[in-house]
Image (cartoon, rainbow, N blue to C red; front, top):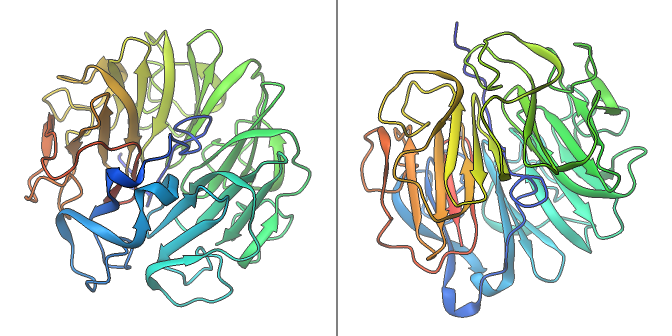
Length: 382
């Protein structure tokens, strides 16, 4: 039976090292302002227009492309990493996920307090992560499952240090769990673990980082709703956690408490995870997808779940990928954005609320885009 957890990721990138940590090449000032579209019930679009959904991209107030090097989208909030190493945040803030010491929502970007020298950001449903240049990690927001990693379950309205983490090179956030890739190629995880998404062989929540079992030579990570992904140096992918919709890509729907190989995926250079689906960007610029597909988010022209990877139709020459709760974004090498999947809030940006099972676009109002992120039911690009 399908469960629809609040997502992200997810970010989520995106770690990880590239997408996983949602890091990306900085845009130039000439490339225009950061844009967002889709659900805006919690002011997560940052366009000062109220709470109405946007069916096409709208300008995020006060953020120019030249100032921003990466973005991350949670379920209800957004983060932007600036080129000076500080972070701006906007949207829902009841759990402290904006990191400004308060709990009121913000419709325009504001500075996350006490953060400098940040090199990557990631956003979960209600929590946020930042990787600093010294290899340590800061976290803030909701902490009911220990996803902040500070050995408590207390919400934090300002950033705190994740306990015991050093030499981190990438981060990722799932719904209510967090991941860190270390310089030695191993992975740490903490937070919610009811489905084994921490990969330590248990279903015990962890309020401090634990080692994901059996992973070495990892080069990228991604956190989904209740599952996790890791990209190895040889271009293959491992997955673990919830698998009721095939989001682990191992040709089963069996939950996995430790990593298993994703079938039929090689030459991978980036991975991202949505609420219940996963994407891999291959070295040749094509994309493979697997998992939950009721809204067409796998982009194969159907709404059939896929427990093994399939090619995303019409996706080629792709530079980066992003996965929202139930939609997917691709950024092509010519700087154009395309989208597929769930669209009830306009998160595909095509001016409609029609779900799409085949990639739509490119979005005509966006060009020369350098980075993308997909949240719960909204999208961001710059």
